[in-house]
Image (cartoon, rainbow, N blue to C red; front, side, top):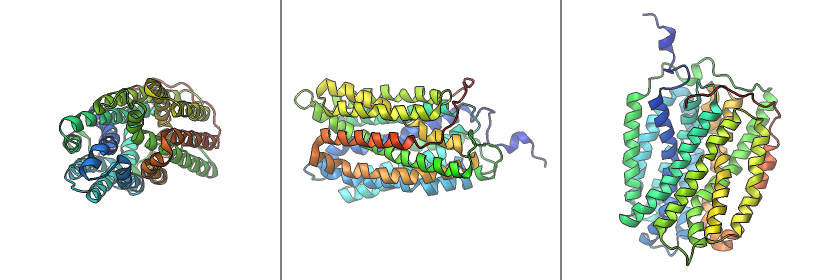
Length: 411
């Protein structure tokens, strides 16, 4: 039987995947970030139940999740290119849900650490598989990545809001059970609506990089994007894991309700998330390197401002910080699309993420001990120094002409 061109391609639409699949892929990004932040939001309640004097003492037990989030990206990306991205995304959704249910069943800190590490292993699948799947065949990847980044950070906002209420009303275990069941449901839905792939990404033709570089320049770009991503995720992990406690500390004597702190944090994350829409569209329209450099530089004074703020001043300063921390996120995924052929994107993304997230997991491990030793103010000054290092790294990217304005894309 002769196979036509229309049935040979795994993509159902000329501009990418069907809308329902795009929606589920964006929900997957929200699930990925939400699940990794539930522990950080609920850690104070878990610490009390497990007999710890302070949340800072329990926080290092979560480092396994972030270490596997990075280390697992390399095999996940390779399997995504060789097996196919559809099957890996089904494994992601179902695996995340099952791991979350196991976290809810833990009875001590070491069981919790093991379950969180398993959760991190499944969470590692999304970035090297889900994002390359989402941008395959689309003309404006920056806009698509921006919307996807918005979804991911709304997941962080949901983690702050929903976890705060569930912990206060029912208990911390429910904060893992409810999202876990939702994730399993998403996996079933994804298996039903996502078109089957007739060949793995590694065997497809087309999907060339947007910017052609010599092998030497490509190696330099990969080194810079990996180093920049590592530094950027230190900022991301430290802030998103520490912001609930930073706000609680800054509002001491003014507001001591965990649910109210969760609402404020959700407001910050929701507003800041829209920065990725703006940045994603700018990536398609303006010079890539200067845009990334300036977004990195602006973080420096904002982190210093937050270091010397309290109460509602801290709320405003933290909102400004997170706008630019979140706004920097689309660049790393955009660099993969910009410089790497689609047949290799999951593997290259996996290599980059393994180094970046593996290194930045140190931020989660160090958060509790560092804050306990030097306090939040000094910690934020340290983050300002890290932001300066990132700006210097990004300046090493290859120079290229500004990208011409592109036609609007349905995302």
